[in-house]
Image (cartoon, rainbow, N blue to C red; front, side, top):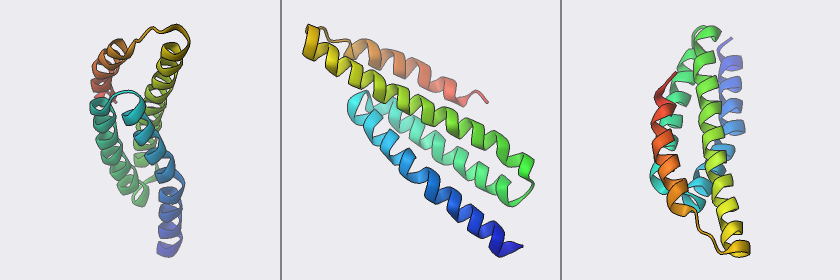
Length: 114
């Protein structure tokens, strides 16, 4: 039983970690570094909780999985906002970077809500 659980645990890391790194780097580079770093730290804590729950009862890991997906979505939306802002600057000359950073900084503490 233990090798099967370890194999599944390892496969979960391999599947999720590259996506997390891409979203973290792109959100930090394209949008704002502070909310991206906070979301990255929260993701690491949630993944640890997910894996500890995964080795115990399966129902304990569900909450960590859902919150982790929500954090990845937040990082994706930050990246998307940075890309849209770049094209707005390129096409129309209007820069919304300060607004986007303010919104991302304001929304990032909401990731703490389970």
